[in-house]
Image 1: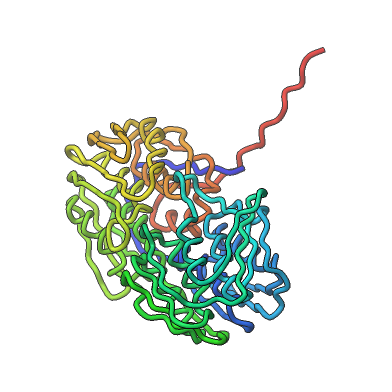
Image 2 (image 1 turned 60 degrees about the vertical axis):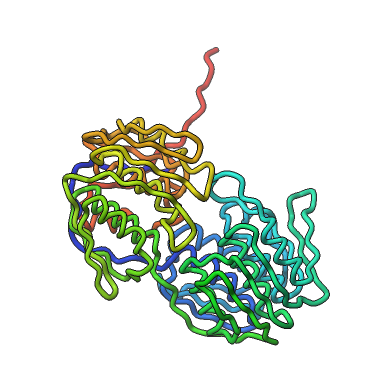
Length: 430
């Protein structure tokens, strides 16, 4: 067991390099098994636990996965000998369900246990199943929570998603690339990592058009080949460091980013009075000791991302005036509020709305990371707070942020990762 200890009140200054996108990596790694060949994937955040677990899942079905260096992996899918992934692996991350689409796309058969991951409320896979069935697959959920999908032959067809779903869009793309005929996904998600996945698959020989719009057309091909590919920078990691710079009244250059992916975040920071300068592959954020209030509504891309909502709430907790956040994606996104209240924030939650009355400052306190992005919010809160903050349950943070202690220390933060002794049993007297 480990925790973070942060001595707050230090402005962040300097330059930080952003790692490859976690959300792209956990889709592209399973996509590599669609070919019977070798893929080399660069700019992989190979030390974060979600990516490590996805690589282990590929190894569990027989693929050979090796690390060429800390950011490049090689996947050889010629040795795959199973189409079943057990709950031992899938319980660790939501993205494990991408192996359903990938295995179905390659073998027309897949058995994958229901996924785990952060508890953000009910996240059904009905849209995934609808898409698989539109391609001719028969899908059933067994009593032991194994999802089985099989088809004599996958055939392209029209798929209309009832709700915009990133996961369903990706899974249908994976299943459709080798299906016979044309698949058209309407009301598709438009996130940057969906475009990245499409680019990766096209580099392997797929025929995908329209990624990044609400209509994606996939014309099935007979086979795919190996390739070398570099994934995009992590939009949410970059946004988190932007918020950390603003919250500490710092001056930080964030390297290896695509500024267009950060526009919704930059716009809200500018509204708060923070200075944001965009360059070709970097962005500079200069804080302001007088943060102004603003309202946020999370929406599918290109709207403000739900994965940045907790971090933004921390900044608004010390803004001048009253801010309102409307969560448009997940119903269980405000669990972190209890932790911010311990630090002196003034926040009231009513359903999917949070009303934030800005306070003068936050106070260091013992808190926990309830999920991945809540954990990132706790780090920002600790960096800006007066006094010492201890964050427990940091395994959630390690699921999505690579070298976070080293990167923040390089910017002047006082943050340490320390071991927490395992609790020991108390021997009764007598």
